[in-house]
Length: 86
Image (cartoon, rainbow, N blue to C red; front, side, top):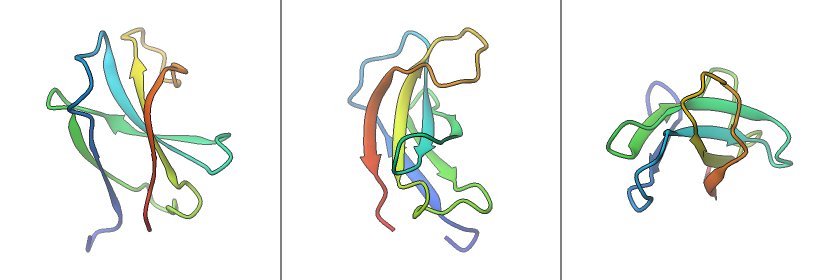
């Protein structure tokens, strides 16, 4: 977009979560994570790429199931992953 790259996510086929869905960017090796945000109740979201972050460096989108436990880290429960098309 005119204000930078955005990532659109739609997981409407997944069951309603016991917790919430969070969207992440991963590097190609799967060793670095960047949290983009939480999907709202419609199971869809659009997230701005953080400044200085490129799809070339973080080409994988991950949607995780997160418990409501206050821990900001990835739960290690990935439900969906996909590769961004630059």
